Image (cartoon, rainbow over all chains, first blue to last red; front, top):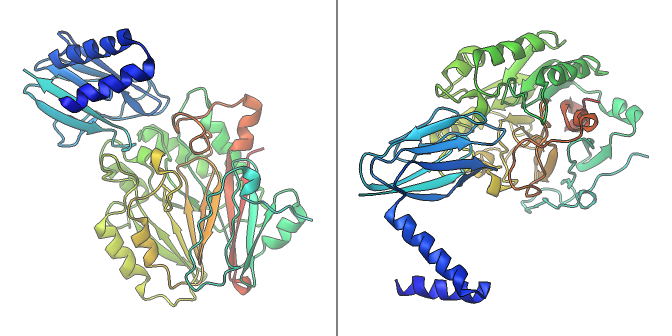
Length: 119
Length: 325
């Protein structure tokens, strides 16, 4: 925790604006509490955005592929596995229990992401 | 006089030479970006490269005991802005092959035959390739060919007599060809992968060969680490290459990166082919390796076929890239 405060302090110095640092803090707090409704992850330029998403149990998570090339969404432990998503195709997974899922694109395995599921 | 291509001219140096007892002149730092094209010939232990501006010279060099052609990444089914008509560019590639001065004995397709592993996409490619003069085509799968069923359909169509996920070898006129599969069971965060079973098979497959046998290895993803940030490489390729160290002449042909690139390391010449469908950016030159949109009139200069000639008396495989223009 101490380290994290330190990092925020540096961020504040770098951006030279306490308001921005406070904004970042609020975003982090909101993330920890989890979005109440459905959550979206986009795929652009061979990247999952956001790379880490925190949601409450039972929240549907939808991935949308916006690249001109197909991608997949596959959790490392195979809890969820999409078919190949062509441009603008979507995949939804609704986590039923808390935990952390790391996932990747099985076609382009350098693409990785993380879902944190909280109560 | 033919123009020598150097890595520096292309703005990037990927050459990485390891001294391992091989004649120090026996390496090539020839690399040609998509569309430029180069002929690379080994003469008396010295590798030379020539630009494609001298057709007469190329025709002289291209005569050998064995001639074959490599095509790659036809991505049948792709229809986005980077190339809305991959059918006609594949047809243009076949026309190019049919007009080569020396008729190739067979074709290699180094994967991504289809874009989405659909039967109709494979059907279209098969139909177009039937109009090529060379009747035999040897395939390896790209990741786009094995999307849905762990490659079952691919193997049913193109890999009936293959081992494991589709690897195999064959001999033509004293040259040993090995088709490898490095697009299956990819691990999070990693690159292409051959896997233990295939590596064991490879070690055994080349064990009985004399060291003077020319070896051609072909696979979809590059068997050298071109740009790991984009996954352009194969995790366990070093292990595979270690089984080939004792051979005097090894040529490695890949696709996947949709542009030509060459490197020579000791006795091994690496070569990647252009796509017949769409170009991809130079490593790191864009936020991602996705399809690169270029002005329509430039597209065919960035697509192409690769013609390979083996000259026994020269102990060389000459690799010539031609664009579709």
